[in-house]
Image (cartoon, rainbow, N blue to C red; front, top):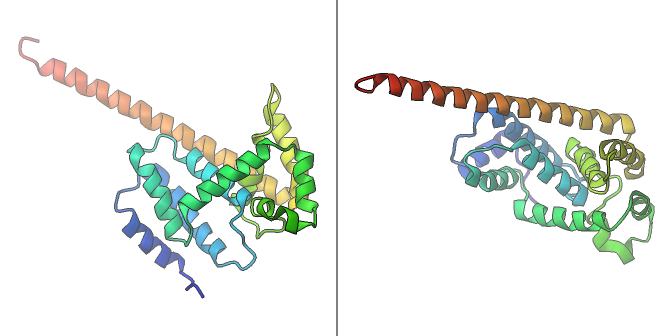
Length: 221
């Protein structure tokens, strides 16, 4: 039986696996993912299925836009997963398979798969879409992203909103809970995007000021 790690133990492992400084704007993301993944790993009813994998990889990619150095992003995800008992490469593969499945089905077909009791014939599918999985914010985002991949056209956002909430009950979750977590996700993403824009503006301003100082100190000027 695998030993259960405390959050403190997971964080200690993370720092061994990722011996770099995490930029301040991304530290909250890292801390929250480690805490949530640690708690999920210790839940008996939790399954790392396709919806969860889509949610986790989407959250990581969305919230690490602009991360520098770029070549540390993969190492960062691996460290977050490893310190909580998951495999980043395995989850990325599961997410890829789930996306392929979602691209070939509409919302009603996904509903049928979720409610179909004939699991033996569709065992591989049920590894990707698992009904009544232990709830987490990561799974809420996974459901949202799953539907978002199928939506298109001018009213894409509205179509996604209506479809993902319609699908929630089939997964065994309440609409209110999922909607609250998805809205928080969107709000947090908007805040970090604005923070990154501000950082970029400050960097450009600092470069401009440095260039002006150099110009003023040149001989004959």
